[in-house]
Image (cartoon, rainbow, N blue to C red; front, side):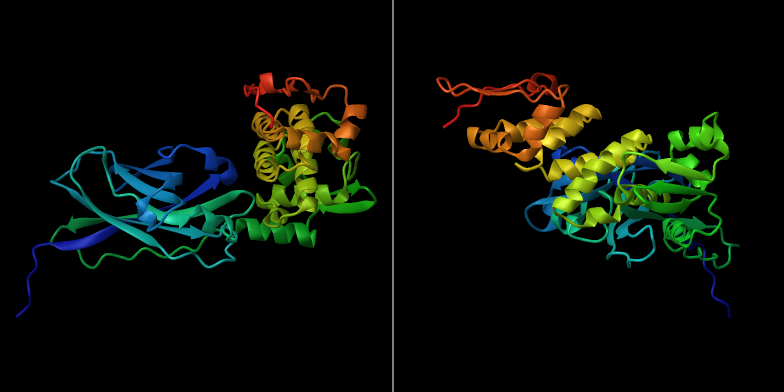
Length: 369
């Protein structure tokens, strides 16, 4: 005798890749600030909320965490919707193995109802991991909904698992192999082969050069002036992969690269790369780099970097004196009339004045011991 079942329960599943840019800049976000992503799935509207800097007990300890929350925005067709939410860190290049998945289960019964908040990873742990590349990281978020099927439905076909995208890795190999390259750049005595279509798709300046009325339209060789070969190499790598692998390291050479790369990003209209460099420099301000980074921020319209530099320079008299003694400041004082870094130390009142503070909205008269 055959067994009879009234209902079969199946699982509908949807997955999305969420890329969070400017990780270093999110440190200053408020506890409740989040990045939102909406999508429609199984006839319902959902909103995934990522809190990049939440101090949460969900993490099981102190410190700030990257926290996930899901909101159900629709009215259930029946009494409620039972869902399971998963999240893990992934490598868009497909090189690293995904992190352990965190999961949340929730029965949603009304619109605007939210799941519990779950810590995906601590900020310190993420900053020290290889998942953070070019000041950005990617999370794979999944929503699974239990649904009842009619009696006549047989075993549902399982969704085919899809690996993480490896597009950036393939483009990096294309750049390295030079296969199909149709333009060569000459930079400080070195040559770099590339593909006009890829460059034009990423940069409005290259679009105008190669497909506009500029003289390089039919040229197979382009000379790049006023740029070091290492900087142009990093620029090309970003254009093809959306990452700056050199920023995984720290040190004076990386800071100098970030300064030159910021100028190059501004030159070629790569706004996201410019923000990545701005975040990298903001996190590494010290006595030796404060003056040059401030000058760079003013020249290339980087208000957040400018504010960070000013905050660092005016915090006390000792820091100010140290910055004034650096070779970087002395060079700027002689060579850059447009750089508004006019510091005055009044011995009688010991007041520090920085002319760019007013523009940065950070004017203060700190007491100097």
